[in-house]
Image (tube, rainbow, N blue to C red; front, side):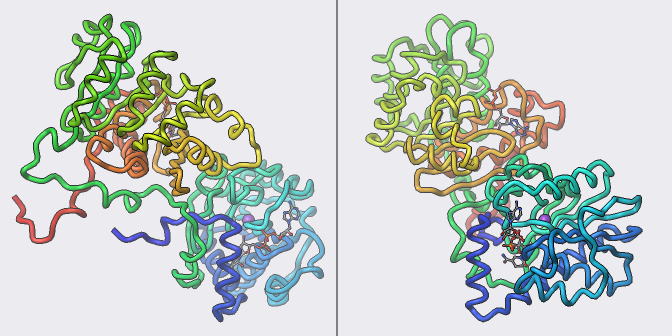
Length: 503
Ligand SMILES: NC(=O)C1=CN([C@@H]2O[C@H](COP(=O)(O)OP(=O)(O)OC[C@H]3O[C@@H](n4cnc5c(N)ncnc54)[C@H](O)[C@@H]3O)[C@@H](O)[C@H]2O)[C@@H](O)CC1
Ligand SMILES: Nc1ncnc2c1ncn2[C@@H]1O[C@H](COP(=O)(O)OP(=O)(O)O)[C@@H](O)[C@H]1O
Ligand SMILES: [K+]
């Protein structure tokens, strides 16, 4: 599957460079602004055909310029209109000044805007250029609009959302719809930004694909295009070992459920066979609950060393319910050369000794994925977690670089980052995935992918996506058990060899 422009995520800085490159390539910059503003006016008329009045709020830069273009187009369409500007419109420069000059109507000061029933607000105050907290005057205007509950269409981003990080700079609009240009920005996907964008429309203002791609980095939205070429189809002559053998380590007698969830998820996600490795005291508890998942007793690290000689063991999951401490560290360090998911207690166990882990991963060169939620992330990477200048994307990237592992930083806006810098942000997860044991299910799906031979980054990204789909299929009342039952199959059709006879 080819990669579409809509799967890219570009930072505001990259977007500014793309804009510049487009102009150097001979495209007139005002034509970009005209397309942007026209797309906004078209969205307004399409989405709110019965608005009593469109109110365009224009800022001091090119976002405001887009607003003036939209205002002129709306006026021409015969719609009722009012325009309010921030600052001295006489000081507008370049394309924004030209757009403002082409709008013949009255322009009032933003401080005078009082929302009225029937208003639809077009927010063209700040977009990609927002560099600091919004001025008080704008924050007050936002509060008036938010209090009035009038619908808002945002140009590029709801003003106040930082396009790089999704953070709110003082205040922000909550848009019903956002029209952005050429590609989505991190702030559209990362929280809290995503919750303020409404529906997101990515409009092509005419910058050629190659110009966008040349500047875009390694950041993508997590879609099947990212990993589908590694999700190989089932060979009719396959057998269970070829489909991959996943081993999941259980905790002691009183905490075995988490590992069983991972094991069941691994089997449902497509591992050919799954073995739950259990300490002696938990064998009975585990045996009472398992059917298709196999059970193996293991106490000491020596036993693990002997078992690891079996190269048919494709991948390992360590952490869910395992217990924090020496045993988790010893097991993890022995597994760093293999395909391994370190989750929960296995991550926490290295809080004070992370260098041992990171050095071993670097030395052994396995396919290692770590899956911290916010709390676990802060335990293992405290200095990165505390750096308020970094976005969630940048935090995950820094952690991947430091640890030499693929970092799957969980949450409503899960980020998966590889040490190489490749990164995806996930967007298909429903909020009811926030249920006990949901993370254990995710870990099992990653394990299944690793057991099938997928590289760590793709295994993790694909798992996050399938986990999100499982949540959607399971519905609002989802529990970890129903998530397991709803893991969707890969769509193997795209990877089937041509000419295959349908059976
Ligand atoms: N990048 C592109 O390809 C295109 C961009 N366009 C528009 O241009 C916008 C970016 O324009 P600009 O770079 O002029 O930026 P903005 O219009 O977002 O911001 C305007 C200026 O305000 C100042 N500023 C930043 N934060 C402030 C704050 N908190 N308080 C007061 N002033 C602040 C900065 O000097 C900034 O350049 C995009 O969001 C988009 O709407 C479109 O015109 C079409 C093409
Ligand atoms: N609000 C949310 N929206 C979407 N997904 C969420 C949300 N909150 C949590 N998740 C997902 O649910 C899972 C929870 O995992 P985790 O925090 O490890 O919980 P547990 O330990 O109970 O399994 C993760 O995959 C996380 O990304
Ligand atoms: K805006």
